[in-house]
Image (cartoon, rainbow, N blue to C red; front, side):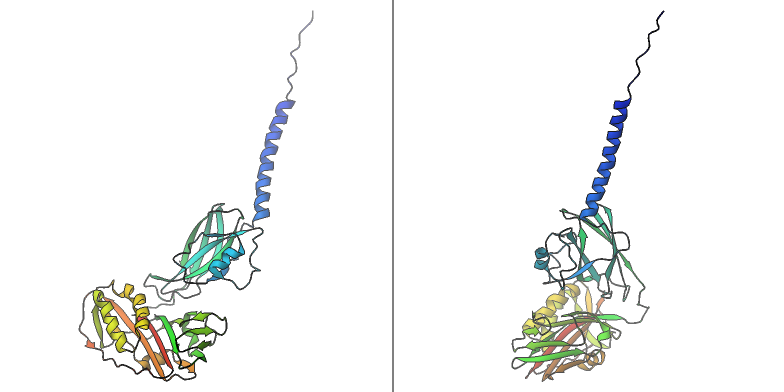
Length: 357
């Protein structure tokens, strides 16, 4: 009697199919990893290969973190660059990081690292040294480019900002001289050197201050920076100041009255309409938001004791206007400051700036 046998099951096709699927998954992962690494170096936490660039113009309102640059020409439209060796557009595009400097922070605010959270998201770590913990108004911009994949169209960048050790101690009267700019008006076109006597106090400058500014100046006020060849209309610096304080004299001015007050007082101090306008459009948005302001204009002797200017050739007329101010909730009694009007003759140098007390 014969016994029928069940036919053996052939598992080979199933095993082959599973093997093909697994191999395909592994191959896909390897392909993705290889593609990423062939096109773009993915940074690890702690790397600091940021490329710092300088804005050609005051483009801060128009330049936003996350803007993508795919060619060197794109970068050169917005920025000055010292070297093209830092860029590798064959394998990368570059994303813009805009860093905002706090009004009370030093200019060594620098990104420390960046990491990829995923292909569309980068996290930036930034630390800085505070000069003073109070305040919170952003006042300046710095620009950095970091490599991203060459086909990147859009990327999200988040920034984590951490203050390092604060140099501000209670009641140490550490404040910052904000936005002094210097105009030069010779009687004929001449070469002029300008030196700031205490460069260690400088927190920011443009053109970059390196021991001295050397410019060619003409009577219209136009300047040519002899280092870069760029045309300027003023020299700019900011610096830490430990001497700002309230005095027995000064002015108490409503925020709403600041424009007319500044027009009158700046003319009294010898500024032209153009110089006064540039002063006002910078300071008015800050001052008019306060109920009242204590205002005092430092004397030439006080300014010179803090930051003497060495100018060659010597100017015939030197006008330095530094305004100390303190926001007030209500008016206080104070003796009105007496101001004198200088006579502008010959080679004239004018400077203006301000300090928040």
